[in-house]
Image (cartoon, rainbow, N blue to C red):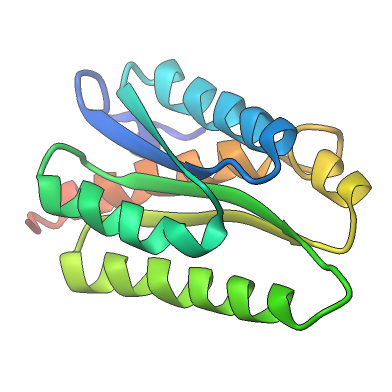
Amino acid sequence: MDAAVTEGAGGVRFAIVVARFYAEIAARLVAGAREAFEEVGAAVDVHDVPGAFELPLAARLCADSGRYAGIACLGCVIRGETDHYDFVCAEAARGIAEVSLESREPCAFGVLTVENREQALERSGGGKRHAGREAAEAVLRMAELRRELGSV
């Protein structure tokens, strides 16, 4: 992580909102995000929601609270046999982006959208990447950019 991401993060509070539908994957994502926040001395609150569809509202509630410098939205959606996957993924992504743009609160999309459990495990710290950590790093950077530019 570069210095621009970490500068000034100490003492700042961030939120993690996490969809707990796939509990094992959610726990791995939270662990990675928490680790990234704590490495720079940032405090973290974790808020659980049932599934990915509920993430945008949870992010909006966190943004509206005024308590947080940014929000990492985490979860996992695994493709099934119906179109449900497409609707949930699209609405979660759209909703999280909307919260960030409307509130001007940095929100990161750390939702795995995968074909199977094995892909989810690989992308939650099992080798390929860690979406939880990456979401936290994105929030840290965007919060720093907002500070650099003097934005509210």
